[in-house]
Length: 122
Image (cartoon, rainbow, N blue to C red; front, side, top):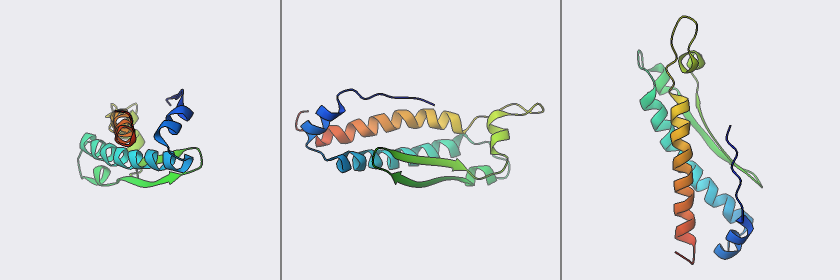
């Protein structure tokens, strides 16, 4: 789990003339972009024997709450965790963790691009 602290967010909101709901909407838009790219990366990383694992990596709808935006990419294959982390009989073949690491960078870039586009200062 990663914790990020945003300092000066209230000043940024004031300069961008956004409401609290506007900030949540901006984050939700960035999250939707991130989830699509994360799903794509996880599917490309997934080992393929039958294609079942790859075809069962899904994005859930973005949840917007008053103080957070939640995005979820999940694998519905029952054996996903065994592939991701390995077992005593087989080596791990991570496909989700690298995709989430990649997705974190996508989210930050996407969020900054949206904020830059909205900003009066550039």
